[in-house]
Image (cartoon, rainbow, N blue to C red):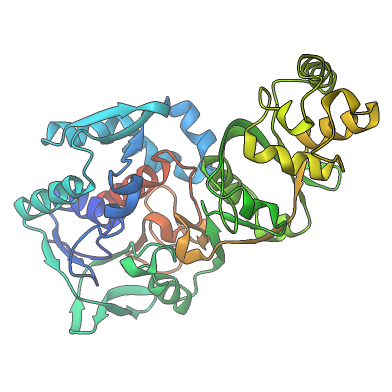
Length: 406
């Protein structure tokens, strides 16, 4: 019986154990924490956004980098296949806004229990509180692993140790170090799906304010690196929310350092339409202070920011605003500028961008092209998706393929 050693008991590692065990292989799963799936407990704000049931032809649009690498993995275990696997084996699911799939109970712990029970029923040997420190490699072929509790031999090894995000869950880069030690290239890692710190102090004054249906764009010289509609949240340090998390995944830190961020508060209106709207409001509230004449158009808390940037005294009456001042207001509403300072630390990121180069991995099997019988799965690979269940699907699919082919 073939013996498979899986390093990491997260989403990718557990699914690798599922597929390997279903092939009749002897499976040993090693997890450095006291329980499996510790990071899964945190996903979806504790509810676990398992996947997204968007049509598969559009699924790849939600993967910013190296989507072609995932064709085999997502073909072997698609989102429909994953949903079917869970439901056929007793985990009830539900669909929410944006095609996101959650356990019907809204409890990520139920997903962990599901896997633990399934793996136990299949005879998978689970080793908790066990840290894998190195591989055993002879003649470019993996022969086993070295743990803090001893050496274990096996016929194949799957590394599914995750990235660097949420290090408290065990994602501390051990897998990268092992892979690099045996000749694999590591694409520079950085935080992705993470909030952004902004230089301007006005963001702190807006802390807690959520803006919906606004447009955030990033301009690098004459080039638009990012432009998207969505929801944004101001924090004490900068900006967050779905729109910002997506931005942090699509655009690198280096690109952001040389770019300008612009916030369009009224993307549904052209400059001319917005100017006409302001003129109507100024007639309607002609004898009110300008700050009170904008309540119909903008959230109350952001009005002082727009007026300050347009150099307009808040005590000015609406009927006293000049044409040039109104033009400055239009410019500020359609393009409130912000200066990128830094991404929040990787420890706060949902995922890690970068990882083991896809050039070193056979996409049809997830096997290393450098070390025979060594496989990789999940976030450790240089591929990641946007928010909405796409990253867990990637982890499950790559893990499933690795367990199937090892």
